[in-house]
Image 1 (cartoon, rainbow, N blue to C red):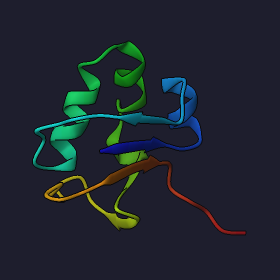
Image 2: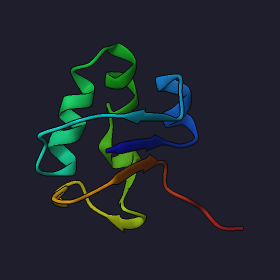
Image 3: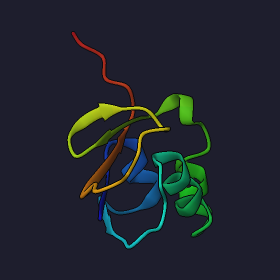
Image 4: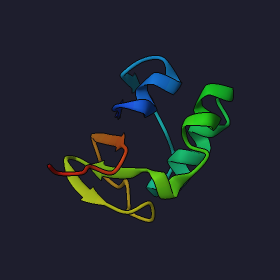
Length: 81
C-alpha cells in the first residue's frame, strides 16, 4: 500500500511517501502502526483533528476500512480563497 503525506505532514515525516505492508483494518489502526515507527511519525499524527485522510483518492474518516485499499493520503484541511 502507498501512504502519501502532504504539506506539513510530509515536512514532519521527512519524505512524501511510504510503501508499506500492513494488517491494519482501518485508517485509525494504520495511524497507530505508523506512530509506533519513530518520533517523527508520532509528531505528524499527534493531533488527528488537524488532519484529513483519503483512501484511494476518496475523502473519508479515520474509521474507514482499508480492505482492498491501494493508497492512503494524509493532509491538513484545505481552505479556499
